[in-house]
Each structure stands twice: as C-alpha cells, then as structure tokens.
Amino acid sequence: MKAGKSLATIFAVPLLLALLSIVGLVAALTGDGWRDALSWGALASPIAAILWACARRRA
Image (cartoon, rainbow, N blue to C red; front, side):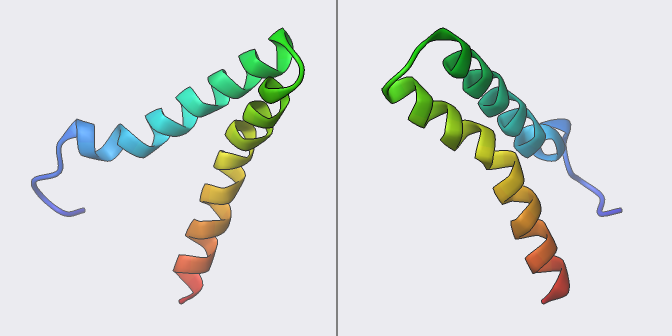
C-alpha cells in the first residue's frame, strides 16, 4: 500500500458512487419524466465504474 493517502482520498469514489445510487433510487421512486432519465444515469454509474476498472486492469 502506498503511504500518505488520506481517508478522503481512499473513500472519495465509493462515497460518490453511493450518493449517486441514493439519488438514482430516490429519483426513480418519486416521479416520471426527467426523473426517470436521472435515475437511469445515476444507477448506471456504479456499473460504468466497474467496467472502467476492469478495462483499466486488463490494460
């Protein structure tokens, strides 16, 4: 493990993904129209992050 990484650095991306997931779930439950698009985008972000990490690991 690299020395000198703070907790904010380590947990920034997981916290962002968690917040996006919560926003997506709330948007999906509360309305239609633009909220549907918001929920699709927000709930797709963890999947996009996983795909990005897998592609980066193979390269």
